[in-house]
Length: 305
Image (cartoon, rainbow, N blue to C red):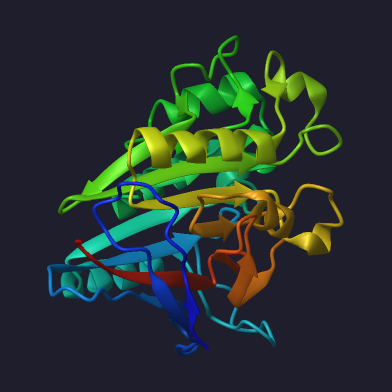
């Protein structure tokens, strides 16, 4: 299946991508790696750049591999294996981006005893380029989260949590631009409504803003003002299986400038999924279940105009 992106009329240095999604698997005792490949071509011969986006979500403190007695996911995942796979891909590919869509916390005794320090140190060592917040990052309160995030060597994003009057004001950014060989990659995030998911005292001072409105506002700025070639949204809204009014599919249908949504929160396995955005352009949604059993991979091949 091929779907051609329409040009938005911006002055991007790179062509808009055409994509061909596909699936591939791995083996037990390792990672399943899910691929969605993007290819683009222009009529004029020019420099091609291949960007590999690796992504995780809802890893939930799964430091060790799953139990060998688990009937469905025996001996899968674990931090050491994930790092091994990531490092191998980095050795094979020139331009790699590594991101996480939230809820790296809560789910094992490592979090209960160390309050997130183990998880942050692991993300540091894996050299994540951007991470967003899930609701479980607030399980020990916003003050503890602020202390833990000071350890982070990677940017933490939230586009629709207003945090200027909280201890997180210096630790969390609304958006980020990453450059790879002249390619400008804009990254933003959308985060779930905290009411009913997070204890109110655990997010004192934080103001929740409409995630779809903020995503549109920031993605438009990144595209038209910052001239980003690719825009990625790290979303902790969940898929439509959450039955929430604001989810990744609703976001996709109402956005104009986001190219890829890396999802989380609903623990869904979403691959090879494309939707039409507000102007009829195709947008990909990907999510890799939970517990770090899967490593997502999106390949973008772009050509300079």
